[in-house]
Image (cartoon, rainbow, N blue to C red; front, side, top):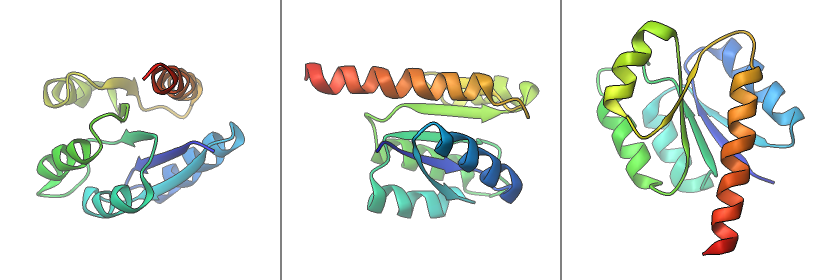
Length: 125
């Protein structure tokens, strides 16, 4: 089973995403901060990161970069509201950006695509 690490500080969104992505057959682990996510990424070795880059932490950007560096081969989805997304694109321009919405169709489609692509890459290596 593929594992997704969701970094989101809103507990209601954590639950919604966990339920929706679990229905697709993924194991979802959640972290409310990048500091917690760093610890979990080291223990769990996720296959995909979904990150809200605008967490209310002072060290958020530094921890975000550390998190991504600890798992350099893992696909990353930046899940944010439209306006700050421009800033997130500058912060992590190589990540896939998905607009945060109550309709999770785009997010689920992107998760499926990235995880199926990573399976193909693993088989080829």
